Image (cartoon, rainbow, N blue to C red; front, top):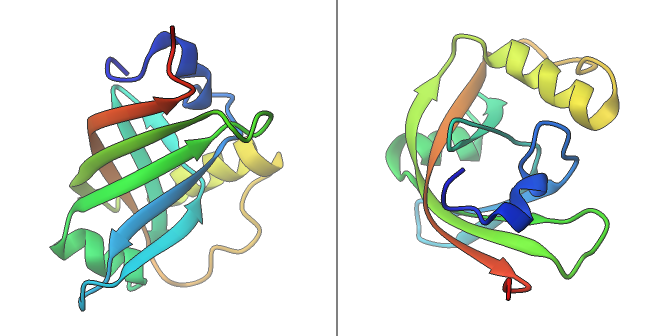
Length: 134
């Protein structure tokens, strides 16, 4: 995660329980923000959703997103990430959901339902942090 300063790598590390707040726009241009679980791998942020949701529809047609990742211990410490969805992937999406659930809740996701799961690969384009490292 080259764009994320070393002092903030813990927020995107494999053991992080930080919640992300994902912002994107609806078809009419109205903004929407959704709290999400996420993972980070090889310089990308990965999020997961069900096929047919608002996120799914928008990510497939309007890839720009913004994401705030807030420190679960210090609410005044956070990352702001701007980027874009560069890949939509079905393979491994259910396994990814279970991995996220194990990280955040300590167990597999209870009932993912019948709708296919989808993963979205977000390329990080810009990062701001607070507080700013000295």
